[in-house]
Image (cartoon, rainbow, N blue to C red; front, side, top):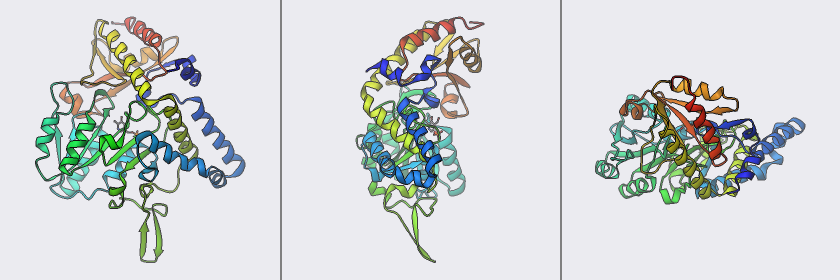
Length: 394
Ligand SMILES: Cc1ncc(COP(=O)(O)O)c(C=O)c1O
């Protein structure tokens, strides 16, 4: 990888050390340029006219995402964030009383709350797939759970918001397909960080966001729905973009995955997402994944040597999201201390609010989260480690 070029494309690295890529990564220059160009165009031409002029580029957003995850452009819906994208898939499923949803301990609260809502409203059942000794979803337990023909859905994140294991999604997908069960993958922290191939994984639906490892703008995301399923899935919400009004009494839903979109959107951000995907593809996802893992491994090793710090990630395969606790300082104090360094260091705090089951299982209330991207360097990690060694009370 050309790290110098990656950093040259990321001007903010001169001012700060950004280890909050799992929150929102720094946008590279081509993304910023694409978005500012479009805002200028809207200011000079008018919003609708600007979008009309960029029609080909807007179409390319779908094909770029398709190339990124090995899907067809007509299987992609561009939606304002991963949560709404996920909701559009989940709430469109015809889940009924007695249907079982299987999820992982690492599930994001934003997804778990909708399970609970449908538990209360429709009587679905939520079952948690136990972890194996390494801390990831136990494939043998999942296989057993799939024996129950009431299981209608497997739904979990490939990488949790608070780090932990990269789930064995290809094996999970194979088990889902063999059992004839739908698989909804939350790839919010995976897309842009690691290779995600929907055909290899075998998921039927996948939700992702733009601003995290993809390095796109905030307020953007996308949904993949396999075409065979898409035709049979009536979106929970419809508008005049998702469907056409034919008569005073009839409408027709469009055939492609854009049936899950709504009409009005942030066009500059949509183009920015397309530019981010093109940028990631040009860098190469596999080399970025290798570098992210290498940097994260280095960071975990360094953290483990600081007295009072405990690295927290579990799993056979781990990601760029590195979490730890400090025996004398809260995660908030760690975050503030690092932010106050001469060269600001951004880390974040992940609390029980976002991954209740996992944190409770491990007796944790919060962790510090340092999430590295390919544009980060070992020297930046060394700077953070030195700052952590100087942490008051350490
Ligand atoms: C695993 C996971 N799923 C879903 C989301 C929600 O994404 P968004 O904020 O784009 O809706 C997040 C955000 O942190 C996440 O980490």
